[in-house]
Image 1 (cartoon, helix red, strand yellow):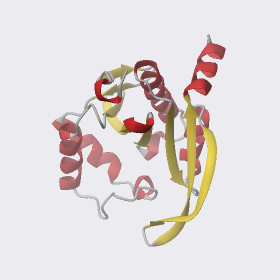
Image 2 (image 1 turned 120 degrees about the horizontal axis):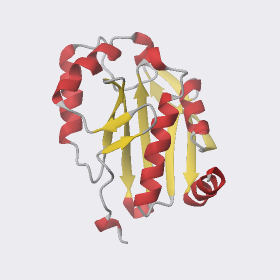
Image 3 (image 1 turned 90 degrees about the horizontal axis):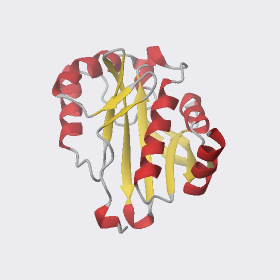
Image 4 (image 1 turned 120 degrees about the vertical axis):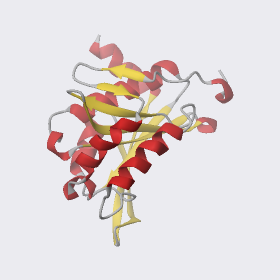
Length: 190
């Protein structure tokens, strides 16, 4: 399978507690509600301060306009409410994808993001000719690095003073999961 004809990933993924699905315009209310929390925003570089309703509208509209073949992004729905997002960026020429994610702060620490990320990892490796999936986080974002580890990713590197985040120079933690590692984990889980 060449990089030009990858099949699309599912537009909805059901997990035991979550529905990952395409965004809808009406999701802007939920996005605006969780984005009001300054603790939710503290590790996110591109989120405006202060976060206004128009920012939620723009974010949801951008997710709807994004090309699903190159940058799929799922709204994370919990108990009928959108509480976050998981998205992938493909680097097809390298057989690689990188993902990003965020979750409403009031749901941190309950394993929901690990559940969502694990489901997306499964679909991506199961359906696409990927050899690796990567993710990164600011070194002080311990919750995010825990999600990556619980999803089976391996710590690969710390890029020291690699990024400027809200005016501060920070280290970035890089994680990766190779297809062979994912297959071993899937076999062990059976």
